[in-house]
Length: 193
Image (tube, rainbow, N blue to C red; front, side, top):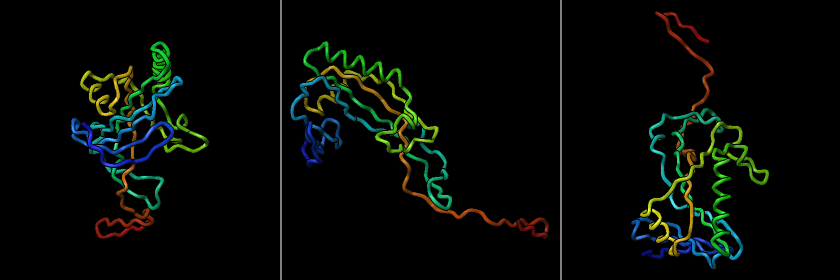
C-alpha cells in the first residue's frame, strides 16, 4: 500500500507523485501513466539507486576543474537500476522491442564520455577516462513483485539493467593555494627555492 505525500510534477505521459511505500518502508517517486502507450514504446523506469560499496572510503582527491587546488571528498559512486518495459499492440511487438533493446545494450555495454554527448551539450564525462557500464540485471521474483506493487500496475514483460558507476562530486572541499616557495632546513643551513 502506498501513502500519497505530494505531487512532484507531470508531463504528456503521466503524473509523478512522492509516496511512502509501506511495503518497502521508504519514500519513492511513483509515475502514473495517463494511458498505456498505444504506439510501440519502450518505457524506462529508474527504480533503485544505491551506493557502490567497493568505492567507499577512497582518499580525498584534487579536483582540477575547481580553482586553487581544491581538495575534495571523493565522488559518491552510484549504481542505478532501471526497469525497461515494452508496450505494443500484441505480445510479438513487445518481445521484438525488448529483443532489440537487449541487443543494443549488449553491443554498447560500455558508454564513455563522447558517447553521452546530447544535442551538442558537452557531457561531464567528455575528455575523461570514466565510463558507464550497462549490464543486464535480472530481478528475483520478490524484487519483480515489489517493483510492480510500487507502480500499482499489472505485471508486464520487462528487463532490468544496472548502470555503474555514476560518480557524483562532493560539495565539500577545502581550497589550498599552490606552492610557490619552499624552505628546507638542513642542520642549520636554510635553503630557499
